[in-house]
Image (tube, rainbow, N blue to C red; front, top):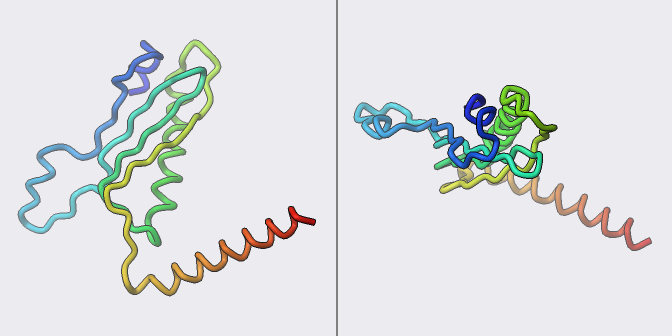
Length: 128
């Protein structure tokens, strides 16, 4: 993938598949990857990454998936070695099923309350 971007920084074909058609034949209960793949596109000196994922557990895996996608983008910026100054651009993540298990709902509620409190404090501070 890095070589493809190096050879043609304007390519629209830089897609790294994670889930292959043969993975759908998991008839013995094997786990199949949640990540489908990553698309890389260089535009205006930035490497943008689109991450396709079929399912993600919000409480356990979402942060790690976002972190790893951004680390991959950082690695690709260096590995592509394109003849221009390149930085990491946007992460766009398409998720078909973002879910939270019932047992995690209390923790999710606390997370939402904490975010609401911080937002309220910022708003009040901005109004002063």
